[in-house]
Image 1 (tube, rainbow, N blue to C red):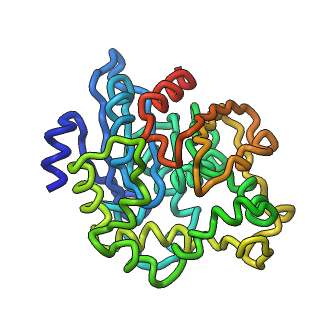
Image 2: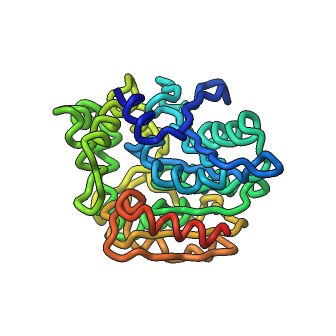
Image 3: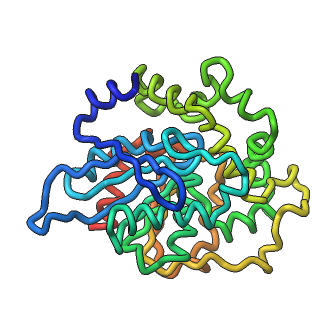
Length: 308
């Protein structure tokens, strides 16, 4: 059903499969105008939980006019491979999926990277490990790993806001999230400030109900090895930040931050300049974690101003 809806609403989108890193990665791309050289710059958009490529539909439409715009389903999601083992969701594998997609499948040695939520966390790891691949780097409401680890160990506001992680790592999470026609999942991603049609609802439900998809997404949390402590408490799973290898970002970076994010507090902007050498921050007041779908024109404008 969703294929027909997408084909009708977004006729320029192309759905493809890449065999990379021992798995299949599904991605959607748009590249409307051809250049004289025959090759546009590449911009890649990485989603988080419980989203998949479809969250970037407005960005694919906009940037696909003059870029090769690509939005993958990350490992474990929607139409991409969904390994059963939790260890198959370790960060080094998630990074290698995207590096191989860009270099080996798409044939690019330089690209613009945009990440949100878990896609942003993976994007931080890519930019840290492969800075030579990144032309420009954009993060939208995703925590810098070094800053976030410090907040989890010391900041009561972020500890409180991260309690949902304990549920996501639990054995009953899948059943609860998928129950009642994915009602909880839809409530997570929908806000009163976004346009959300019946077509959108159908596309999301079909994506959520792909066999193993929600387990794949939850396995990111389970494989990460970092629990949120009970409010105000220290726990052994929170790493000692002084012992962590800092995640350094040495590429031009834009952080877009919606200030009314209920999961990630504004404290995540504190101390970023310790880890990012070339940093711009744009704050969006009165917008939630899902600002990309609430204010797509604002997001597109901020990205374009930064990369162009």
